[in-house]
Image 1: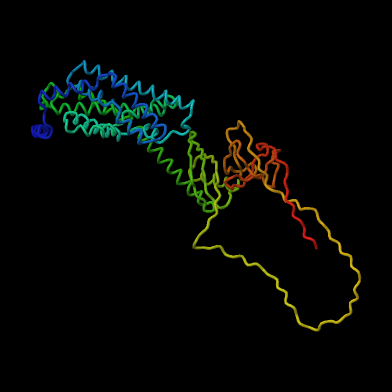
Image 2: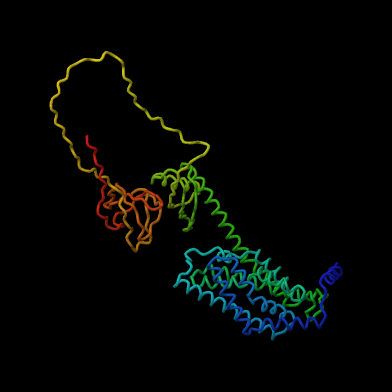
Length: 465
């Protein structure tokens, strides 16, 4: 059995001649040297990757992967550990550590500049950043396959065209840049997750390189002696196996959280749909210990009252069996169905029909008649008054369904509203009815609006009789 396995490996993966092995070793050692070209490409790749992550652009991130020079020192570390070349091991390790540190610092610097001069808002982290904060065993398998492909392509010059695809698959630079972004934003969860992904990729690629180079005959001991595997191969295999522990834990936590959020989404969607066939447009879930804070946007044809919102909250709490607080933003729509046209409302019309009969005959003596023409004053018709929202330091300006009721939309300083006719005083605060440019009718405190302009009226003349 053992002899047949050795024979199969020899037949599938041929050992390289000594001259070819020496040439490839020299090429890999030169590519992993930390010279000007290496650091120049490292800076350019890091800049492109950081900007691509901030702007959530996959195409830009792919371009940064193609420029990243970090694959070469990792492959060189694998080759040096297998052959015992201490000089190559020191140079390639220094190149990898200095390049990785430079990438983290540069990405953090770019993120800080964007924070003070906000070209791109990072109130919510883009998906391209969040995708690199949850490494899983799948990432380890991808890195292993990519590392084997890269090492094998380096031993086969005719397969060098596959290296750009390997650089994209293994993705070494984006996790480093995500680590720098997390440090700049003081989001240690993001920084730690991205750092774990980079370490996973680096260690697994190095292990794959050691394995491929061993099978290609680079080890000092003949590869047919499988009872005495190189120490570097055993050590890298142990490190790869150890990485499975945190990767499995993070994957389990992520899948558990995703399943919980999916359950919450389903429950909220069902309860919202029960409210006059309303539709759930957006749901934000915030975990506060055992409690949940839900902020939802719904589309409805009938405005929800405060009591209905409380009923919705009670129904969600009953289904989830945990404390829940909700905030509801409403979007009002009018539903028209082409299959069910609106029914016309009948209008009563009075028609007078003369009844024929004898016509009375009488004699009329004309007398002088005085005719008076009365001119009535114009009828004042109130018009909606345009008023602007005052600048304020409050964190948010909102338009409410009713005084102190649910929020139906947000406002901004300087926005123009049309004040309607109704006003109310609730808890000592005057509220006025307004309509915004989107046609939403609601209520706002009058103190948030600019002073009213002079009243205007339209004269409705009464025709002379």
